[in-house]
Amino acid sequence: MIVLKYILKSFGRHKARTLIMVLALLVVTVMLVLLNNSIESFQNQIVELVERDTGEHDITITRSEFSPSQWIDVERTSVILKQADPSIETIYPRFHATVEIQGGNDIGNASLLARTLEDDLGQVKVVDGEYRLDEEHVVILKMTADTFGLAIGDQVDLSYILPRARPKGYEASENASVGRVTRRFTISGIALATGLGGANHNGILANTETVQEWLNLPGRAERLVVVLDESVYKSLNTQAAIFRARRIAEKIYDALGSEVETYTFAINKAKGLESSDVVFAVLRSLGAVYGLMVMGVVGLLVYSIFNTNVEERQRDLAFLRILGAKRRHLFGLVIVEVLVIGLIGVGLGILIGQTLSGTVVSPVASTLISQAASGQEIGIQFKMSVTSAAM
Image (cartoon, rainbow, N blue to C red; front, side, top):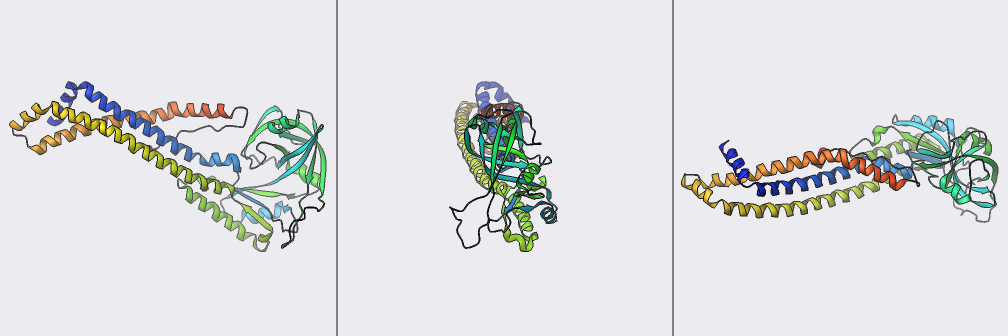
């Protein structure tokens, strides 16, 4: 207690020196906490970031090019897949293909994505018109509308090129005739979209039932998308989440039995997470190196100031030696002073850093992200996580 009182009085006699050391530690700690919180927050949102490109579904099942039938029996196959693992939450039928679009005098290609009304994966923001996909209506994406000069109420002819099976051991014939089915649709809306797993930019959105009627394929779909329970990706260990998703895909593979050779599987979300995990490992390493460098500079500053402090207090230390203080007690006095300054500077830095993370950095980052995505695609709401790992 006497030592602490002596140190506090010493701080009072050397206010400028004490303030400089505390501020140096405080500023550096705040910067490191903000940096680490940002890295951890982005990693926590990595699933959402990956879903922007790969889609919010987890597993995609399509027919193999060697399959005699290029279409999937939705009801029968869905029953088989749902029994493969309890983590399978929902299965949606879709059509996803490149179609020929003719609007006015322009002819080109665009991605057609047909979904059921229950399929609410992804984000679709209508910027003009309405989201209406019934009775020969489609919604086109803004880039497609700009490319072909289309507006609400315009009619477009869509030609769906029917896929053909390829026998094993034979190359696909480039000169073979292809079947196509053409139908006229009316544009009901123009939208921006993300997280659909296709047709994010140059695309056309339609209803699955409409496409089934168009192609005369009742109860069939071009693909099935499997949605897993959210708990699969709740693990803080990204590799564990990826491994679990792959294990479920393997169970689906086994559940299809002898038919499995006629299907292909894609786990694009898990692959995207695997790539991102390497990126965040590099970011954390860079953050650690940055922290060591900054703390090294601050350490030199504190070391220099304390050397000056010891020189200034030689008379005090000599007086204490005369009174019988041992060398180790004097050394302990200096150590305690260092610890007190460190606790004050680092403690305040952690508190201020965690506070700024939620009150300043999070809203500023969300604003910058939304402005950067304005007019291009739907942005992501950044959520700053206040983590103990940052400390």
